[in-house]
Image (cartoon, rainbow, N blue to C red):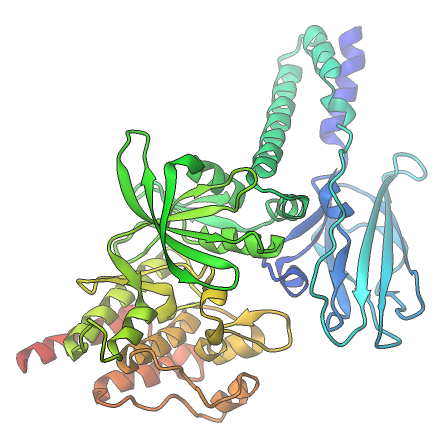
Length: 532
């Protein structure tokens, strides 16, 4: 009899109507500078950290787009108000109704009546299967800025201890285990216990890994995002999709095994070190270490992790992938990469121009060979459904034998600030390496990577001159639409400039693929050998 009383309660917890409420990645990016979903409610579970976060809305963002859906029949009531008359929020749907059972978007417009100050906007959502019983309250606060300039700092409400849901209480588990005699009930209990410990382990990892509440609160929301990473464990194996948290756990190493030696590259908050990593057998290995200073913000740390892990699991001789991650208390994260006496390709090419450099002038055959290596690496990325989105010399490495590896773009914005520009959307982008459709519509594809590769080829032949040096970033889109392109470098063979011109075709479907470029460049290289 006691079992019969407990089982309905258990099933009510498992089978209760669930819903999701979140900002999609495209909506988070202009607010936080991070392409990741921000969940307020996921699978019926309230994200306490996200709800406590007072999200700042800059002056150039006038609409908030929420995505929601339910897995059952749910009723809702929505109320929205502002604490000042400077903002008059408006909802684009009925304030009461039934939540859609497929992913749908509703919007809140936040027009500024005056161009000064800031206003707190409170969104209250009540959800229930049967009014007025079992009501779920979701209260969100947004700080809307009406100033012309954007706020420099982000205010995050400190994390508070949230109460554990009643079905996670230890006494409740003991009671169920003691009384349950059904295999079905035991299976459900095991699932709940597994979920509980997994979530606890995730929170523990984050709290131990970073030194301040600002980072903890932000990453707890970010790690619940939809960002996935391709993981190829063995050649020929099927692609396994993993999230950021799983990747960090798999790559985690102890900080005491990493020794920093010399700074290779340095920016405002980013650092790239040469260092040593000591494995469990006591063997030392040369590594690159990407990290940040204690001046880095929560967003900058989170972007470092997302971009640094973007190519995790890929395995190719022309691809540099992350080898390990170290996140420990009171220190900034370390991202470890293999070091093979290589250096940044952009720095290498720039050194070739200086008379006092020990570097030498590159021959056409050497440039062709380096180009073919980059093409091979990009073929591999595209074959594995991976878009780089920032193909450039600054994101490649080269060693003394001129062997090339394509790297991720983690910290590139900070280390090479003159290569990135903001077009008023609060995000730095490599404007002068981007395809027209990427500039105008933020569309990225294999064809947009081809465009960027054309600029990289131009960098190789000019020893990394600045592309479009005299063109204002705000004028780049119109300049390209009018048919203007980079000029042919001095001593550049016509065949290579033809390749560049094809890469810069206005229509994406008119650009070659990397497979086609490989065939042409190999043929050109064979012809070149006959005359050298």
